[in-house]
Amino acid sequence: MESKMSNIDPNFKIASFDGYKLEWFDVHYAPFTINGIYSHENGKPFCRIPESMLKSFSEGIQFLAYNTSGARVRFRTNSKYIAVSADICYTEDFSHMPRTASAGFDLYIRFNKSENYTFIKPFMSPHNALDTKSVNSIAEINSNDEMYDVIINMPLYGGVSRMNIGLEKGAVIEKPHEYTITKPFLFYGSSITQGGCASRPGNSYSAILSRWYDADFYNFGFSGNAKGEREMAEFLNGFDMSVFFYDYDHNAPDAEHLKNTHERFFNIIRKAHPQLPIVIITKPDFDSDKSENDKRRQIIRQTYDNAILNGDKNVYFIDGELLFGKNDRDSCTVDGCHPNDLGFMRMAECINRTLKDII
Figure (cartoon, rainbow, N blue to C red):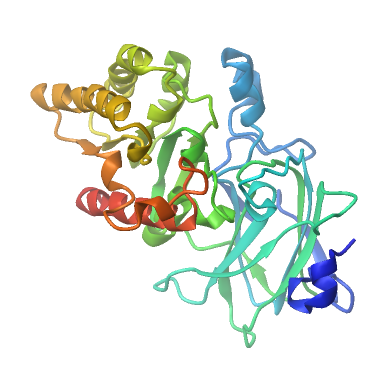
């Protein structure tokens, strides 16, 4: 069911499949690749943690593990259009985050491996739809029959139980190019890490950095539930990563909790990965409570300082107060806490100044 606005302005309408000659493919089968998600058995919802391990974690993480933040489908084709038909595990329309991000997909392409990816279009369910758990949408590509690489990012919150790709009948379809950086970036943290409240999945800071470096990545942001648990550190140790970022400052209930967990979490990761670059980040919305946030920053900074004193040459510290820059900082969030697209871009730019020294 279309909204009143889409009847007034056709640019707000979601394109239907009518008139397109489509051939449908299940993303679980080659030549498609699924990146950034741990478990993706056909017929089951995508899950960021092995289902056999879920009971080791809090109820919040057990639920959020089915959010598909960081998950993406990749392939190459010369199709003049790309369609997505998918089922969402659940939908919850946030008051401060659009459905294009919480339960939508977005499409990026590039024609040459040396180019940056370009955003084309989101895939989303219609506004006021009776069934908000289905996404059926299509995007036209000005390809001139050229082959191009495709990334389709999955929702940051909604989760996906089925995903099919529709392509022009007879179009060529191939496996994607390998990532330039095949060992993934790995991100662990709060709702900000998960992507709240970007306008679409490709605008989370982890996705932005991944595209800039043509790097695989995993997003283990757990909204309200990243608390530096020992079990989480031990799980993350199982990944062969190129860089580890962690910024769960926001979800620590208080400074004392942070003090009891932050350095311990670092040491668990460092023991398993002696040479791994580890980037420690504090919360970006520093201005919300400068006194309390300064106390938290000092605790986190102590983890870094102690590592340096112990001779660690692969640890980096990013002060969250710098993430939004100096000018118009109040324009970087939707609610004083969660970044909007401007906030996420500034975060990516700030983190990139450190990442350039690592890569």
